[in-house]
Length: 116
Image (cartoon, rainbow, N blue to C red):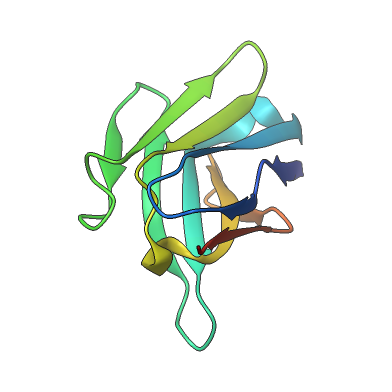
């Protein structure tokens, strides 16, 4: 089992920045990839960014150049630095990891609201 706890969400004005954190505990040695998803009201959950064990990253096209995903292996923590936030980035952001036995684990989610 892997336990995930997100933090760092909040209310920010358009153009502002937030940094989300996801702390993992439990069977962290089994983690293969770490990902951020988001879900806006009435919308399906979508993948925002991810990072693999060898450091490869991917980004949703809508956030490329504004968001940066990183991982501190020593702290078992993943981050999402979000700059130049837009109202359409408003959503609940979820941390996700995939283990080496192909099991998905999810955090509880953290609300990000971009509004003036």
